[in-house]
Image 1 (tube, rainbow, N blue to C red):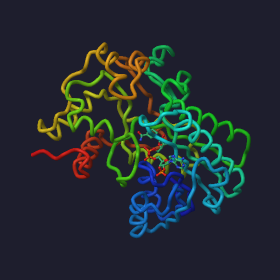
Image 2 (cartoon, rainbow, N blue to C red):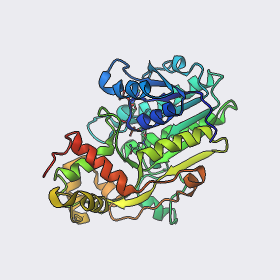
Image 3 (spheres, rainbow, N blue to C red):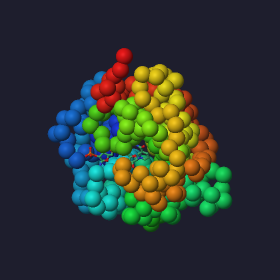
Image 4 (cartoon, helix red, strand yellow):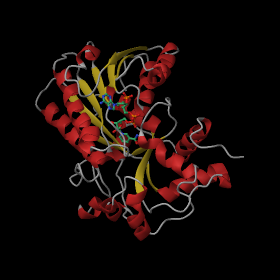
Length: 352
Ligand code: NAP
């Protein structure tokens, strides 16, 4: 990896994944220009200043909202690489999915990349996309008559009404490739992670990553979990992949970042192996019919989502990420460290 010290813009610097990206960049001596919506919100940025104070690199924060057309120009001055991580990652608590998810994701990507077009020093953009832009529902795998999703696949089944977060990610990634292909100054590499777990450097993130682990630990899922499998990966592996994508000249195209596919019950079993029986980790799968009937009453789960995902196998080919240089750490360690942090932060009450 050629990582001679340079200046890198990281959008959404306050985020869960961005925290680890910025730590690795600062530890390698790079200058990081981070954008946040509010640089004075100490809860969101204190951890960044703290890590910069003891690292060889330098951090400068800039104010930028995804929806402001010119917000990223000042932060981009002098940067050779742009890592665009900012995008709403919320699965609940909004009334208008387009305004909450799709508009900021797509317009934000356009605003960042049009600023790149105005900034002649940038030669590479790394976009934090998702497996959500590779597929929408687990049943898409069977429909495609494939054994595993790979980087040639695109999500064609999500919409603003069905899986709006997934839709926001695929629309944003498509917009990014469209803008990239219209010019020759910079190239684009996308990192497409599955569900990201692992310790957070910030307590302020709204990332949906921690929600399932908390629900498993506090007993809300005691009566059973859906037979739902999804790809999982460690946050530090995702962050490292961003640096590999940025500094490896041969990096090209899309990279799926998934270590393993686990079911919710599989995650519960791993947690029980480490933390024992004192926490009410789920022990059984709820029948699909019950999940179908109850899901919409319990949260943002629709019957269409249940039909197309629960009980359906999903698999990923992650060989391109290994060719890039990613060495996945054991997912048992990832989950144990993340749950331990939920205990230490008081998100789940400690039991003796
Ligand atoms: P996160 O902690 O919630 O970070 C999201 C970041 O986006 C925050 O810094 C947030 O800034 C920023 N943001 C949201 N709306 C914004 C707006 N209107 N203007 C400016 N900034 C805005 O979530 P994360 O898990 O680190 O996610 C980072 C990226 O990874 C996202 O693109 C997400 O789609 C992608 N991803 C995440 C996962 C996962 O499992 N976590 C998996 C695949 C892909 P504020 O601090 O101002 O709110």
